[in-house]
Length: 199
Ligand SMILES: Nc1nc2c(ncn2[C@@H]2O[C@H](COP(=O)(O)OP(=O)(O)OP(=O)(O)O)[C@@H](O)[C@H]2O)c(=O)[nH]1
Ligand SMILES: [Zn+2]
Image (tube, rainbow, N blue to C red; front, side, top):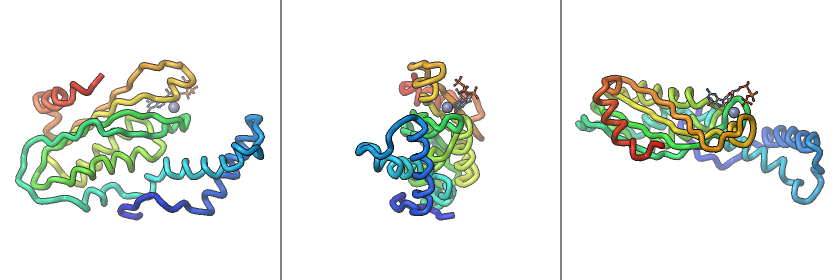
C-alpha cells in the first residue's frame, strides 16, 4: 500500500473496463452514446469514479506518521470546517459537508495538513457517514496515541435530496470521542468551540 500519492495517473486497464460498463449504462437509460456530447463521457466518468474512490490504496496511518513531531503541548488542537466529499455506499451518490476534528497531544503533535489529508483518504471510499467518522477517529487514536480525540461530521446526502425522500435541508451530524473527550467538560469545551459552525 502506497504511503501517500497524489492522484494523477489513471490505470488504463481499469479505466477501459469501467468505461465499457458506463457505455452500457448510458445505452440502457435510452441515450445515444455516439452523439458528440457523450462520446467521451464513459471515459470521463470512469476517471471520475477512480478519483472519487482513490482512498482504498492509500494508508492514512502512514500519512500521519510522516509528520509527527515531539512537542510538549498538552492543550486541545482543533481543526474545524474541513470540507469533505464522499459517496454513500447505498446509492453511490455524493454526501458532502464538514468535519471538525480535535485532539489533545500526548508528547507528539501532527502536521496540521495531515488531518484533512486523512479525511480525504477515508472519504474517497464507499462510505456511510457513521463509519467515516469512526475511521478518522480510530486512525488518529491508534497512530498518534493522543490523550484524546474528537470527530464531528455534519453532512448532506444527495440520495436524500435528489431522489428518495427528497429533503433538501436536512443535515446529519455524527460524532465520536475517545480518551479525554469522553469527559463531559472536555467534550463540552470542544462542542462550544466549534458550535458557531454547527447548524
Ligand atoms: N445510516 C446511514 N444511512 C445512510 C447513509 N447514506 C445513505 N443512507 C441510507 O441508506 C438507506 C438505504 O435504504 P434502502 O431502503 O435499502 O434504500 P432505498 O429504497 O433507496 O431508500 P430511500 O432512500 O428511503 O428511498 C436509506 O435510508 C438512506 O437514507 C449514511 O451515511 N448513513
Ligand atoms: Zn445513499
